[in-house]
Length: 321
View 1 (cartoon, rainbow, N blue to C red):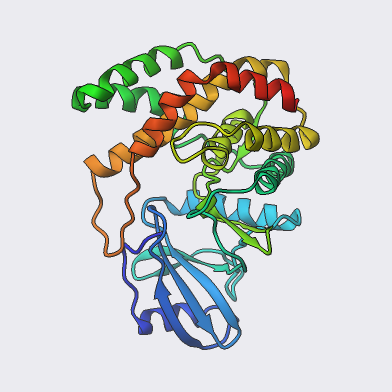
View 2 (cartoon, one colour; view 1 turned 180 degrees about the vertical axis):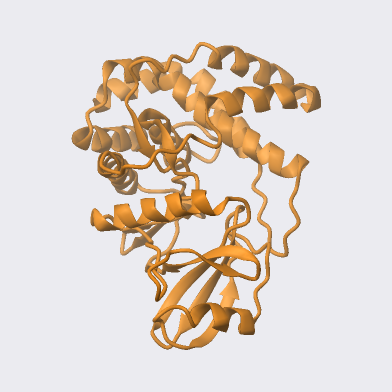
Protein backbone atom coordinates (compact mmCIF):
# COMPACT_ATOMS: atom_id res chain seq x y z
CA UNK A 1 0.00 0.00 0.00
CA UNK A 2 1.58 3.26 -1.17
CA UNK A 3 0.41 6.55 -2.62
CA UNK A 4 1.09 6.78 -6.34
CA UNK A 5 -2.07 8.75 -7.16
CA UNK A 6 -3.02 11.64 -4.85
CA UNK A 7 -6.64 12.38 -3.96
CA UNK A 8 -7.99 15.76 -2.83
CA UNK A 9 -10.89 16.32 -0.45
CA UNK A 10 -13.32 17.29 -3.21
CA UNK A 11 -12.59 14.14 -5.22
CA UNK A 12 -12.91 11.99 -2.15
CA UNK A 13 -16.17 13.60 -1.02
CA UNK A 14 -17.67 13.02 -4.46
CA UNK A 15 -16.54 9.39 -4.40
CA UNK A 16 -18.03 8.84 -0.93
CA UNK A 17 -21.35 10.37 -1.98
CA UNK A 18 -22.06 7.08 -3.77
CA UNK A 19 -21.79 5.09 -0.51
CA UNK A 20 -23.98 5.00 2.58
CA UNK A 21 -21.06 5.81 4.87
CA UNK A 22 -21.83 9.37 5.97
CA UNK A 23 -19.82 12.55 5.43
CA UNK A 24 -16.04 12.85 5.06
CA UNK A 25 -14.24 14.02 8.20
CA UNK A 26 -10.57 13.31 7.41
CA UNK A 27 -8.20 11.13 5.42
CA UNK A 28 -4.49 10.32 5.13
CA UNK A 29 -2.24 8.33 2.81
CA UNK A 30 -0.88 4.95 3.82
CA UNK A 31 2.82 4.51 3.04
CA UNK A 32 3.14 0.75 3.66
CA UNK A 33 3.27 -1.63 0.69
CA UNK A 34 4.23 -1.24 -2.94
CA UNK A 35 1.37 -1.85 -5.38
CA UNK A 36 -1.64 0.48 -5.00
CA UNK A 37 -2.56 3.89 -3.56
CA UNK A 38 -4.23 3.59 -0.16
CA UNK A 39 -5.81 6.01 2.29
CA UNK A 40 -7.41 5.80 5.70
CA UNK A 41 -10.76 7.57 5.36
CA UNK A 42 -12.77 8.67 8.40
CA UNK A 43 -16.43 9.60 7.98
CA UNK A 44 -19.30 10.28 10.34
CA UNK A 45 -20.00 6.51 10.44
CA UNK A 46 -16.47 5.17 10.97
CA UNK A 47 -13.05 4.56 9.41
CA UNK A 48 -12.50 2.82 6.08
CA UNK A 49 -9.68 2.14 3.64
CA UNK A 50 -9.83 3.63 0.15
CA UNK A 51 -7.73 1.76 -2.43
CA UNK A 52 -6.92 3.21 -5.86
CA UNK A 53 -5.71 0.40 -8.11
CA UNK A 54 -2.63 1.30 -10.13
CA UNK A 55 -2.04 -1.76 -12.29
CA UNK A 56 -5.00 -4.10 -12.66
CA UNK A 57 -7.81 -3.92 -15.19
CA UNK A 58 -11.37 -3.59 -13.86
CA UNK A 59 -12.20 -7.22 -14.74
CA UNK A 60 -9.31 -8.44 -12.57
CA UNK A 61 -10.33 -6.12 -9.77
CA UNK A 62 -13.84 -7.52 -9.72
CA UNK A 63 -12.22 -10.94 -9.22
CA UNK A 64 -10.13 -9.74 -6.25
CA UNK A 65 -13.05 -7.98 -4.60
CA UNK A 66 -15.28 -11.01 -5.04
CA UNK A 67 -12.56 -13.20 -3.47
CA UNK A 68 -12.51 -10.88 -0.47
CA UNK A 69 -16.28 -10.96 -0.17
CA UNK A 70 -16.29 -14.76 -0.49
CA UNK A 71 -13.77 -15.10 2.33
CA UNK A 72 -15.69 -12.65 4.51
CA UNK A 73 -18.86 -14.67 3.87
CA UNK A 74 -16.95 -17.74 5.09
CA UNK A 75 -16.59 -15.93 8.44
CA UNK A 76 -12.85 -15.42 8.06
CA UNK A 77 -11.30 -12.17 9.35
CA UNK A 78 -11.09 -10.44 5.99
CA UNK A 79 -11.12 -6.75 5.10
CA UNK A 80 -14.19 -6.88 2.82
CA UNK A 81 -15.20 -4.47 0.04
CA UNK A 82 -18.22 -2.22 0.54
CA UNK A 83 -20.88 -1.98 -2.18
CA UNK A 84 -21.93 1.45 -3.37
CA UNK A 85 -25.58 2.49 -3.46
CA UNK A 86 -26.00 0.80 -6.85
CA UNK A 87 -24.58 -2.50 -5.56
CA UNK A 88 -21.13 -2.25 -7.17
CA UNK A 89 -17.77 -2.83 -5.51
CA UNK A 90 -15.75 -0.74 -7.96
CA UNK A 91 -15.90 2.96 -8.87
CA UNK A 92 -13.54 5.60 -10.28
CA UNK A 93 -11.61 8.07 -8.09
CA UNK A 94 -9.20 10.54 -9.70
CA UNK A 95 -9.22 8.53 -12.96
CA UNK A 96 -8.31 5.24 -11.21
CA UNK A 97 -10.49 2.22 -10.39
CA UNK A 98 -11.15 2.39 -6.66
CA UNK A 99 -12.85 0.50 -3.87
CA UNK A 100 -13.88 1.28 -0.32
CA UNK A 101 -12.82 -1.47 2.12
CA UNK A 102 -13.71 -2.16 5.73
CA UNK A 103 -11.00 -1.12 8.17
CA UNK A 104 -10.17 -3.89 10.62
CA UNK A 105 -8.77 -3.37 14.09
CA UNK A 106 -5.32 -4.55 15.09
CA UNK A 107 -1.67 -3.98 14.32
CA UNK A 108 0.82 -5.58 11.96
CA UNK A 109 3.85 -7.54 13.15
CA UNK A 110 6.20 -6.46 10.39
CA UNK A 111 8.66 -4.87 12.82
CA UNK A 112 8.87 -7.79 15.24
CA UNK A 113 9.49 -11.52 15.25
CA UNK A 114 6.27 -13.57 15.39
CA UNK A 115 5.70 -15.97 18.26
CA UNK A 116 5.21 -19.70 17.86
CA UNK A 117 1.50 -19.25 18.58
CA UNK A 118 1.21 -16.57 15.90
CA UNK A 119 2.91 -18.84 13.37
CA UNK A 120 0.45 -21.57 14.28
CA UNK A 121 -2.38 -19.07 13.76
CA UNK A 122 -1.03 -18.37 10.27
CA UNK A 123 -0.91 -22.06 9.41
CA UNK A 124 -4.49 -22.40 10.57
CA UNK A 125 -5.87 -19.37 8.72
CA UNK A 126 -4.05 -20.34 5.52
CA UNK A 127 -5.63 -23.81 5.59
CA UNK A 128 -9.03 -22.21 6.18
CA UNK A 129 -8.48 -19.89 3.22
CA UNK A 130 -7.57 -22.80 0.97
CA UNK A 131 -10.59 -24.83 2.04
CA UNK A 132 -12.97 -21.88 1.73
CA UNK A 133 -11.61 -21.12 -1.74
CA UNK A 134 -12.71 -24.51 -3.03
CA UNK A 135 -16.26 -23.16 -3.44
CA UNK A 136 -15.18 -19.95 -5.18
CA UNK A 137 -16.24 -20.31 -8.83
CA UNK A 138 -13.83 -17.94 -10.61
CA UNK A 139 -10.29 -18.87 -11.70
CA UNK A 140 -7.26 -16.66 -12.28
CA UNK A 141 -3.70 -17.62 -13.30
CA UNK A 142 -0.82 -16.34 -11.12
CA UNK A 143 0.92 -13.05 -11.92
CA UNK A 144 4.27 -14.35 -10.70
CA UNK A 145 4.02 -18.08 -11.09
CA UNK A 146 6.61 -20.64 -12.14
CA UNK A 147 7.08 -19.36 -15.71
CA UNK A 148 7.35 -15.72 -14.55
CA UNK A 149 10.04 -16.71 -12.07
CA UNK A 150 12.04 -18.63 -14.68
CA UNK A 151 11.77 -15.94 -17.35
CA UNK A 152 12.51 -13.06 -14.98
CA UNK A 153 15.54 -14.82 -13.55
CA UNK A 154 16.89 -15.40 -17.06
CA UNK A 155 16.27 -11.75 -17.96
CA UNK A 156 18.12 -10.53 -14.89
CA UNK A 157 21.10 -12.84 -15.27
CA UNK A 158 23.08 -10.37 -17.44
CA UNK A 159 22.37 -7.61 -14.90
CA UNK A 160 23.28 -9.65 -11.83
CA UNK A 161 26.14 -8.73 -9.55
CA UNK A 162 28.97 -11.29 -9.69
CA UNK A 163 28.07 -12.42 -6.18
CA UNK A 164 24.48 -13.08 -7.29
CA UNK A 165 25.22 -14.82 -10.57
CA UNK A 166 26.13 -18.22 -9.13
CA UNK A 167 23.07 -18.21 -6.83
CA UNK A 168 20.70 -17.30 -9.65
CA UNK A 169 22.20 -19.85 -12.01
CA UNK A 170 22.02 -22.61 -9.41
CA UNK A 171 18.45 -21.71 -8.48
CA UNK A 172 17.32 -21.73 -12.10
CA UNK A 173 18.77 -25.20 -12.52
CA UNK A 174 16.97 -26.39 -9.38
CA UNK A 175 13.66 -24.81 -10.35
CA UNK A 176 13.60 -26.51 -13.73
CA UNK A 177 13.22 -29.79 -11.83
CA UNK A 178 10.27 -28.62 -9.71
CA UNK A 179 7.48 -31.15 -10.28
CA UNK A 180 3.93 -29.81 -9.99
CA UNK A 181 2.29 -33.14 -10.78
CA UNK A 182 -0.16 -34.30 -8.08
CA UNK A 183 0.24 -31.12 -6.02
CA UNK A 184 -3.15 -29.89 -4.72
CA UNK A 185 -4.11 -26.55 -6.22
CA UNK A 186 -6.78 -23.93 -5.73
CA UNK A 187 -7.31 -20.35 -4.68
CA UNK A 188 -4.30 -18.88 -2.84
CA UNK A 189 -3.55 -15.52 -1.22
CA UNK A 190 0.01 -15.46 -2.64
CA UNK A 191 1.24 -12.56 -0.48
CA UNK A 192 0.44 -13.40 3.13
CA UNK A 193 3.28 -11.54 4.82
CA UNK A 194 3.30 -10.09 8.32
CA UNK A 195 2.41 -6.65 6.94
CA UNK A 196 -0.72 -8.12 5.38
CA UNK A 197 -2.16 -9.33 8.67
CA UNK A 198 -3.45 -7.69 11.83
CA UNK A 199 -3.27 -8.97 15.39
CA UNK A 200 -5.27 -7.72 18.36
CA UNK A 201 -4.36 -8.89 21.87
CA UNK A 202 -2.16 -11.63 20.33
CA UNK A 203 -5.12 -12.91 18.26
CA UNK A 204 -5.27 -12.77 14.47
CA UNK A 205 -7.83 -10.08 13.60
CA UNK A 206 -7.38 -9.45 9.89
CA UNK A 207 -6.00 -10.72 6.58
CA UNK A 208 -5.37 -7.91 4.10
CA UNK A 209 -4.25 -7.22 0.53
CA UNK A 210 -5.70 -9.90 -1.73
CA UNK A 211 -4.42 -8.39 -4.98
CA UNK A 212 -2.16 -11.31 -5.88
CA UNK A 213 -4.90 -13.89 -5.25
CA UNK A 214 -4.95 -16.55 -7.95
CA UNK A 215 -5.07 -20.28 -8.57
CA UNK A 216 -1.80 -22.06 -7.86
CA UNK A 217 -0.35 -24.79 -5.65
CA UNK A 218 -1.50 -24.57 -2.04
CA UNK A 219 2.02 -25.67 -1.06
CA UNK A 220 3.46 -22.54 -2.71
CA UNK A 221 1.18 -20.35 -0.59
CA UNK A 222 2.36 -22.19 2.52
CA UNK A 223 5.99 -21.65 1.46
CA UNK A 224 5.36 -17.90 1.13
CA UNK A 225 4.00 -17.80 4.68
CA UNK A 226 6.86 -19.87 6.12
CA UNK A 227 9.53 -17.75 4.42
CA UNK A 228 8.22 -14.61 6.12
CA UNK A 229 6.84 -15.86 9.44
CA UNK A 230 9.20 -18.65 10.50
CA UNK A 231 12.68 -17.16 10.02
CA UNK A 232 15.36 -15.54 12.13
CA UNK A 233 16.78 -12.15 11.14
CA UNK A 234 19.49 -13.79 9.03
CA UNK A 235 16.87 -15.64 6.98
CA UNK A 236 17.46 -19.07 8.52
CA UNK A 237 14.40 -21.09 9.45
CA UNK A 238 13.31 -21.37 13.08
CA UNK A 239 12.55 -25.04 13.72
CA UNK A 240 9.98 -24.36 16.43
CA UNK A 241 7.97 -21.78 14.48
CA UNK A 242 8.18 -23.77 11.25
CA UNK A 243 6.93 -26.94 12.92
CA UNK A 244 4.07 -25.06 14.62
CA UNK A 245 2.95 -23.48 11.33
CA UNK A 246 3.06 -26.75 9.40
CA UNK A 247 1.30 -28.71 12.14
CA UNK A 248 -1.54 -26.17 12.45
CA UNK A 249 -2.03 -26.18 8.68
CA UNK A 250 -1.91 -29.99 8.47
CA UNK A 251 -4.56 -30.35 11.18
CA UNK A 252 -7.10 -28.64 8.92
CA UNK A 253 -5.89 -29.52 5.41
CA UNK A 254 -3.74 -32.66 5.53
CA UNK A 255 -0.51 -32.34 3.59
CA UNK A 256 0.28 -35.06 1.03
CA UNK A 257 3.27 -37.20 0.08
CA UNK A 258 3.81 -35.43 -3.30
CA UNK A 259 3.88 -32.16 -1.36
CA UNK A 260 6.49 -33.59 1.03
CA UNK A 261 8.76 -34.41 -1.92
CA UNK A 262 8.53 -30.92 -3.44
CA UNK A 263 8.56 -28.93 -0.17
CA UNK A 264 12.26 -27.87 -0.21
CA UNK A 265 12.01 -26.78 -3.86
CA UNK A 266 8.79 -24.88 -3.20
CA UNK A 267 10.38 -22.95 -0.33
CA UNK A 268 13.17 -22.06 -2.74
CA UNK A 269 10.62 -21.00 -5.38
CA UNK A 270 8.84 -18.70 -2.93
CA UNK A 271 12.11 -17.06 -1.87
CA UNK A 272 13.11 -16.63 -5.51
CA UNK A 273 9.80 -14.95 -6.37
CA UNK A 274 10.23 -12.16 -3.83
CA UNK A 275 13.95 -11.68 -4.47
CA UNK A 276 13.18 -11.18 -8.15
CA UNK A 277 10.17 -8.93 -7.45
CA UNK A 278 12.26 -6.64 -5.29
CA UNK A 279 15.13 -6.56 -7.78
CA UNK A 280 12.70 -5.57 -10.54
CA UNK A 281 11.20 -2.83 -8.34
CA UNK A 282 14.65 -1.30 -7.89
CA UNK A 283 15.82 -1.72 -11.48
CA UNK A 284 12.50 -0.51 -12.92
CA UNK A 285 11.10 1.91 -10.31
CA UNK A 286 7.64 3.46 -10.55
CA UNK A 287 7.02 7.10 -9.71
CA UNK A 288 5.04 7.65 -6.51
CA UNK A 289 4.84 10.23 -3.78
CA UNK A 290 5.00 7.68 -0.93
CA UNK A 291 6.60 4.58 -2.43
CA UNK A 292 8.02 1.84 -0.19
CA UNK A 293 10.79 -0.21 -1.81
CA UNK A 294 11.75 -3.37 0.03
CA UNK A 295 15.29 -4.66 0.29
CA UNK A 296 15.98 -7.59 -2.06
CA UNK A 297 18.85 -8.72 0.18
CA UNK A 298 16.34 -10.17 2.65
CA UNK A 299 15.10 -12.76 0.17
CA UNK A 300 18.50 -13.32 -1.36
CA UNK A 301 19.60 -14.45 2.11
CA UNK A 302 16.51 -16.61 2.51
CA UNK A 303 17.08 -18.24 -0.86
CA UNK A 304 20.66 -19.08 0.09
CA UNK A 305 19.53 -20.43 3.44
CA UNK A 306 16.87 -22.68 1.88
CA UNK A 307 19.50 -24.31 -0.30
CA UNK A 308 21.58 -25.04 2.82
CA UNK A 309 18.71 -26.22 5.02
CA UNK A 310 17.29 -29.21 3.17
CA UNK A 311 17.82 -31.64 6.04
CA UNK A 312 16.20 -29.27 8.56
CA UNK A 313 13.30 -28.60 6.19
CA UNK A 314 12.57 -32.31 5.76
CA UNK A 315 12.97 -33.03 9.48
CA UNK A 316 10.47 -30.30 10.42
CA UNK A 317 7.99 -31.65 7.87
CA UNK A 318 8.20 -35.12 9.43
CA UNK A 319 7.86 -33.64 12.89
CA UNK A 320 4.79 -31.61 11.96
CA UNK A 321 2.97 -34.05 9.71
